[in-house]
Image 1 (cartoon, rainbow, N blue to C red):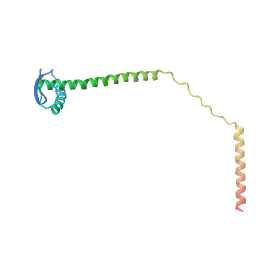
Image 2: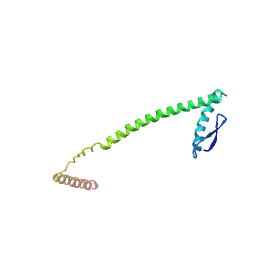
Image 3: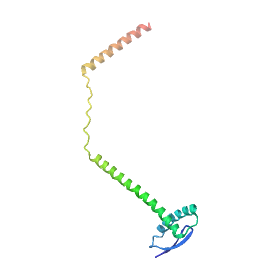
Image 4: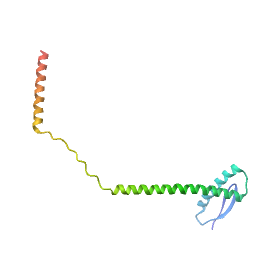
Length: 131
């Protein structure tokens, strides 16, 4: 078992850990040291056992807050997944029917005849105005 020296609150501690867990131990020790540093800055020097107790309690408080957030997010995720499941499994809506008016051929023929007359009148007016 590897022996590792960690620094917490400016003090060194020899601890053992499983092979390959050294990086995790140093990471956890850094978190505890950060909390101990906050205590040291606010309160000053205190007994080692009290400093470790307070720093541990501060970390536990943060962990409890994080657990509450995780539980709330998990509940929200379950609700969103249920809504998504319901939306995916709901029946497809009926296709929307759109009606388009059909213009009878007699109307288009009449409109074409009116357009031809209008063009003929426009030509007559142009001829007379240019004289």
